[in-house]
Amino acid sequence: MGPETQTQVPLRVFFFPLMSPGHMIPMIDVAKLFARHGAATTIITTPANEPFARPSIDRANSSSPPLPHSINLLLLPFPSSVHHLLSSGHENLSTVPSSSDYPNLFTAIFSLSTPFHHLLHSHHPDCLVSDSIFPWTAAISADLNIPRLIFHGPGIFSLCINDNLDLHDAYGQATTFTIQDIPHNIQMNRWEVPPTFNLPSLVHMLRDAEDKSYGVVVNSFYELEPAYAELYRRKPGRRAWYLGPVSLCNESADEKAMRGLAETGHEELMAWLDTKPAGSVVYVSFGSICELSGDQVEEIAAGLEISGCCFVWVVRDKGPSTPEGFEERVEGRGVVVRGWAPQVVLLGHVAVGGFVTHCGWNSVLEGISAGLPVVTWPLTYEQFVNEKLVNEVLGIGVRARRDGQDPTVVIGREEVAGAVRRLMDGGDEAEERRGKAREYGRMARTAMEEGGSSRVDLDRLIDELSQRRGVGGEEKGEVISH
Image 1 (tube, helix red, strand yellow):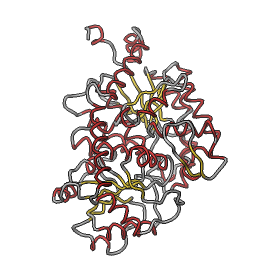
Image 2 (spheres, one colour):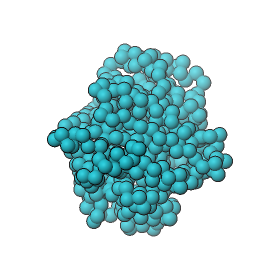
Image 3 (cartoon, one colour):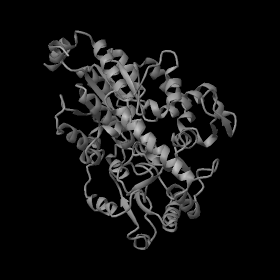
Image 4 (cartoon, helix red, strand yellow):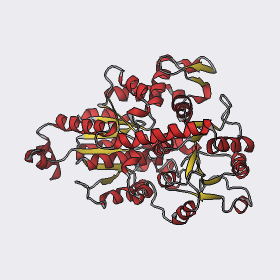
C-alpha cells in the first residue's frame, strides 16, 4: 500500500439496523469488520436503543490492537408526532409489551424518513448499509447519490425461497406446494410462508428498493449454501457479498459476551458448565422476541426433565414462568437463565453438545459456527424456511414438530424429550449429524480467515466502494470535517 493511499481519508460507512437484537447485533458485527479493514464506521439508532448498541461499540473501540478509526454512534430521535405510538418509550421489538404492539413501532419507524434524510445529507457518508426492512432509505440514498447496501437478516437459502415465492405466487394457490426452480425438492405449507407475503404492498416496496440499491450483504458464507449462493447472484443486475458468519469477528470471551446488552454475572453458569463432560449439555433458547404460551413452557420443562439430559434453558423475562418446583427438581442437571444470555459464549463451551433453537437465522448460524447439531423448533417469520435448510439441505437437525404439523399446536413433553434424546444420544444417525455439524463449523471459521471466502468478499466490496468514491474522497472528507 503506497503512502498516498495510507494518508487518504478513510471510507466512511453508515449502518442503520432495525431496532431488534436479531438485527442490531449482526449489523454491529459487520461494522466491526469494516472498521478492522480501515473504514470509518457509524451506527445509527434511536436514543432508547443506545443500551443495545453502546456496550459492543465501546468494547470494539477499546480492543487491542486498536481499530484504525473508532466506531461512532449517532442517535436519531423519533419525531414527537409518533411518541404516542411508542408504548412507555419502548423503541425495540424485544422490549415492547407484546407482538400486538409491533405495528405501532413500525409506523413510528417509517416516520424517521425525514429526520434520516437530514442526517444523511449533513454527514454524506460514502456508503449506507441499511436494514432491508427500511425500503424508504433507498430513495433517500439515491437522491443524495450515496450507494445503499441492503443488509439481509436471513441467509441465502431463505432469500432464494423468497425470490421464488415472489415470482410464482405458489403459496396463494394451495395449502401445500413445492418450491420451483431450486436445487432441492422443498415443500412448504401455507403457514410456513413468511408473513411479509401477506402484505403485497410491502413486498413491492422491498423489491423496488432492492432495484434502486447498490447491492446486498448477507450474513452467511459461500461454503454453507454454495448452490444457493450461485442461484441468488444469478438474477440479472443483482450483486451480493457473503460476509459471514459475522459473529466470528468476536474472538475474545469479552467480545462475545458484550454482543447485545452488557449484562454480567454469567461466571457462575460457566463454572457450572466446566463441571460437565464434553458434549453432554443441550442449550435451549427461543430468541429475544418469540413468545411461548404458558402451556408450551410447561411442556418444555417437563420434556427437559424426563429427557435425562443436562441442559441450560434461556427464558424471556416477560414470558411465562417455569412450573413451580421445576428448578429444584432439576438442580445439578439443569439451569434456567432469565433474560439475556451470552449465547455465542455458551454455544462455544466444550460441555455444550446440542442446541434447541427457534431457527432465527442468527441462532442457526451461531450454532453452525460452534459445530453443533440442533433441534429445530420454528415459531414465525423465516424460521420455518431456515428449518428446511438445517434438516433437508444440511442434514444437521432433528425436528421438534412433526412435518406439516400446525405451528399453533402445543408440542407435548414426550415429543420434547424424544427430540432432545435423538439429538444428544449416541447412535449412527446422531453421530452423522454431529460430524456434519463439526465440518460446517470448520468451514465457517475458514471462511472468516485471511484468504477465506467471506474475507475475500469483504475485501472485494471495500475495494469497490473505495474505487467508486474515487480520488476525490480525500477532498470530500475534508469538506465534511469542517
